[in-house]
Image (tube, rainbow, N blue to C red; front, side, top):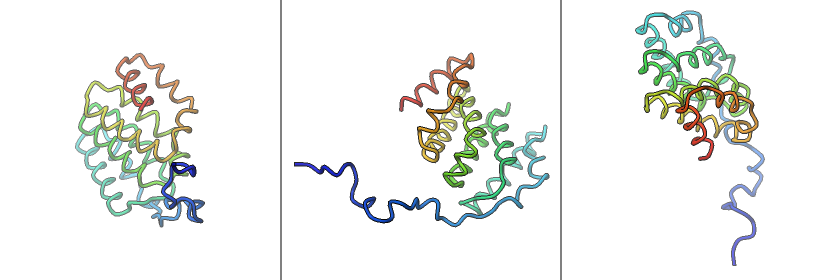
Length: 178
């Protein structure tokens, strides 16, 4: 015996299968929340100001768990912070990128893939295990959002594997295998 219908509990077989629940979630446009003051804090030479900026971004996502809008500048600033010399801020930025990726729609994640993936893939090669773990968490969220095919078909994996970091290579290959 056995079910020849394939791996499903039947729930995906009705009309709702055509509708991705995530795409119908009401999202808040955060464009107006992203201002030069916030971006200046995130790019400040002073670690306390960068920390303050990350705190403001956390507050933004606490208020707006589902986002839309023009937020590439914020995303780019966060990705730059992922490699911060202050490892605590770098880890916090990685976790914020993960939060942001969760907050965006699948379509927005695909559109921002070329911004998100390189920052996370470089961080996966960090010498600190907590940084690598935060990067893997972010990569897992990204893979859930964009589908593994988008990642696998991207030239960005090849680019990431070109880095002269054995840690990055082994961690990235290990992540890809999972």
